Image 1: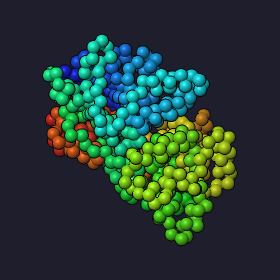
Image 2: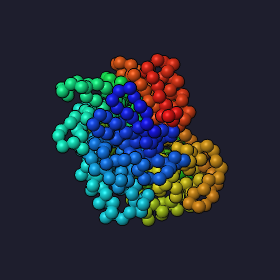
Image 3: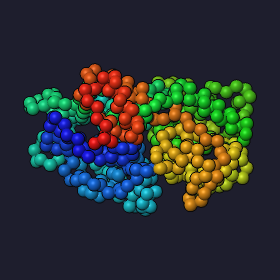
Length: 471
C-alpha cells in the first residue's frame, strides 16, 4: 500500500495496517530508501513469511524494539537479498539475537548451527546507537557519500530498549543542518508512570507522525492500582488453593509482573499474609524470559526512578528469593504434572503472552478444567489467538488437538499493558510543539484506528489524519 505525500518522499506500509502485527514501514527518500521494522504477522493476521517487496535498494533498516511482531521477519529479509546496516539501540541490539534464535527454533525447527549462521549475519549488520544522538544515514547504492537522512532514537517506554525514531530529511542546501521535513515513527509507545522503565516523551517536531493505535479506543486501568488488584486476585486464589497462571510476553510483561510481585512481598503484606505468601512459589517457566530478565538487570541505567530506588534499598526486584526459574523441559513437564495432581498454590509466569505457543499451553491444558485455577491475562490478545478465545469466555477450547473444558476463573488486567492507552497516545501528539501536518495511524484493529482518528480530529491535533486501514 503506497501513500503519496506532497513532498519528496513516500511512505509505504507493508504491515500493521489493519491489525497489530507485522509492523513494517518503508520510507522512500530522494536518492534512497529506509525500512522501519520488519515484523511477524500473528493470530488471524498470519500470512506467508516471504518478503513481498524489493529489498536490494534499501539503504538501512531501523528497528524500534525487539518484539517479534517488529523483528520476526528479519531472516526472511536477509533471504530476499537485504544487506544494509541495521540501526537499533544498544539494549535492542542485545535482545534481537535472543528473540530471533527462539523464533527460528519454534517456527522452523532450525538446528543451532543454522540459527547461529543466520544470527551471525544479522550481528554483522547491526549498528547499536545511543538514545538522543543524531546518526547520519547515507546511500548504499552510490559510490560517493550522499546524505539520505539523520535519525535519532528516543525512549518509548514500551520494553527495554524500545524507541520512537525521528527521521530528519535534508533540505536542498548543502548544510546538514538544513531540514526539509521531520518524520517520526512511534513504534510501540508505553504508558506513563510505569515503575520499571522511563516514561516516553513527545518529540519537538513531527511534520508527519506515524503512530500506533493498539489501544486507541480505550483507557487502561490505573497503573498505580494494578499491584493492589494483582494482590487481591492472588489472595483470593490462596483461599481456594490452586494455581495462578499468568501468560506473559518474555520481554516487558514478565519483568513488570516480577517487579510488582516482589514489591508486594517486600512492602504490602500484613502479618497473616506474610505467612501465606511465604509458602507461595513464584515460578518463571520460560527460558527466553529468564534470559531477557538478565538483560533487564544488565541495563539498569534504563530503569525508571522507582526501580532504581529499590536497588538502592538493597532489594532485587527481578531476582528475589521466592522466584524460581524453570529451565529444562523435563523439569517443566514434571512441574505441570505435579500442580495438576496436587492443586497446591503457586504463581506461574510463562510464555507466550497470547497463549499461541510456548510452555503456557501445557499449563492451560492441564489446569483450565480445574475450578481452583485462576488465569490472569495481562496483555493484548490478538484476534485468532487462544488467549483471545479464553478472554471472550469460551467454555471449551482446543489445545494441541484436544478439546479442554474451561472451568478456571479468567481475569483481564489492562494495567499491565506495555502499550499506551488512548489518553497517553493523545498526550504524545499534544506534546509536539508544532502541530503535525499529518498523523498516520497504524498498528491497531479497525475500530481502534477509527476511534483514535476521530479523537485526533475532534481535538484538532493535526492538519490531516490518515488511517492506514482505509488506504
